[in-house]
Length: 268
Length: 299
Image (tube, rainbow over all chains, first blue to last red):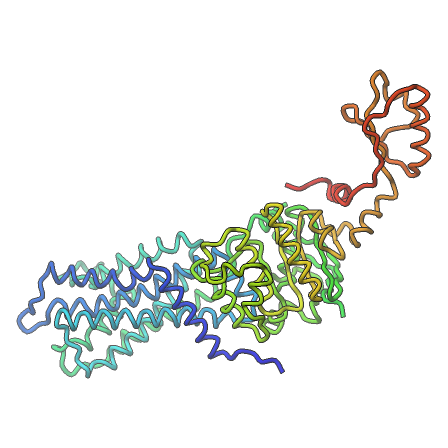
């Protein structure tokens, strides 16, 4: 009788291993955890932290937005870059040569990214609450958690799609930065644009980031009473996620570009 | 049961036939070398056997299984040593072996593997701090972490300095003595000759010769080779024998019966009172056979 490790224990092992790698990659940890906190500190310093009459404080707006931004960095950006680099280094190819089922390897990466995203959201909201008086209405908590789950799933899938399409590990950061940063600006992550041009608003509406931010932010807004879950926005993010999964599955590669030897054999 | 049986294996990429009708039989416990120049089709063949690629045509059976169809049940019985070491640079040696070992049903303890490849001093060092040779030794340990019955070694010593190659060879010899079947690809003749029980020489996607190192040498080596320097004041036409090659003043003859040719030659030299400098008789080496069969291509 062969004693094969079970799927659950394999996924757990993978998550722990990926977490260990994350904490040993200071640059990823910095951009995911520290950088959004720096923005929170800067913005509250620049814009002050006075509530508008009948409204909320700037920190009450920034903290959940930046929590979403961290969660997206932890999933979309880190999965895209990390997976593409692992492919370049031949690690994905090695994994394919072991009995580890490929889906478990990818599930481990996504599980780890989700864990890091959760840590970064908790840190952001905790710093907001302790340092800037951000309120966390517990009634909205389940809806915010739901938005987190759907959003993280969607952006994990998008991260894997970028990993699938990126030619190599060097181009992955360019792709994620060139997409996430402009999108954050048109999605009201860093500040609310008053009366934006219609086309700008439309771009924000098309992509899932704005929906993620609103679906996470609104339940935590103490001014919005009798709040309902943003089912429409969650559904729209889920659609993006499903499309990303379909395309990523279609285009995902486990091997780096052909080695010198393989090129020689293919072209002699 | 043979460890590997391959019949009529073909792999094409567009119009290129990277592997063009290969048959192989590797016995269990054998060290089998696929020897050939770069671009000959070795890596493609091995990657099909590993299950990484689909063959275009032909039949492949490894330990009674189809590598493309069996998935995890096949992969838990093989070990793969990649051409380029592929591991997470931020993990330590022990962590890496623990991690990959954890996915196999039978794993060899990390400490044992570390001893086997001589990385005891580096057990807790991050991989990024290891030298190239140490990383290759870790790569060998990774090939063994699941206690495989069959080990694929793809160009295991390319880029090694001579002493690192000797070290790697002795590790492979150790493995062979444990009864593992080993399929080795290499473009170094001395490596194949030193390690392999059986060698298949592959060129342009086809096997051009196969046998034990000794059989291969004997194959074209029914002929011996006599060499000497043409004495001063003698032209080739004056020799009592017909040379097969002359370059500079080095005369080379390939002969069926070296004793009588040598007798003719030395008698003639004594009569003329000339000295045959650098006179030697030898048999072609594996290298000569290899160059003859592969047309000397090795770029």
